[in-house]
Image (cartoon, rainbow, N blue to C red):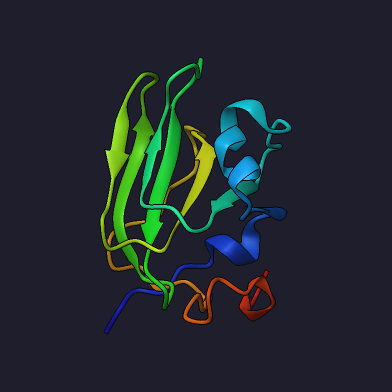
Length: 122
């Protein structure tokens, strides 16, 4: 059985970056994420942390919402990717909060071209 994650239920806000411009701005140049806020880059198979001053947590997810790769506390000036990913979730690392693990199943369905109307439980 795949572990379930309540991360999206407890997140205060999910910010979607689906246009080229929004994805290029990402977590570094976009509006500052608040505590409990996540950034979803879609489509996205690779991210970098160049120019960041603090670590970030990153989860690569497939089009059924399963976490394929997870990196907690990615330091600045790094690149990480996952070729099979459809999207990534990012947040600034919060030392007291756990992050997603590989195999976690999120209530997100990205099989229809990333149509954000298909997101559940946010």
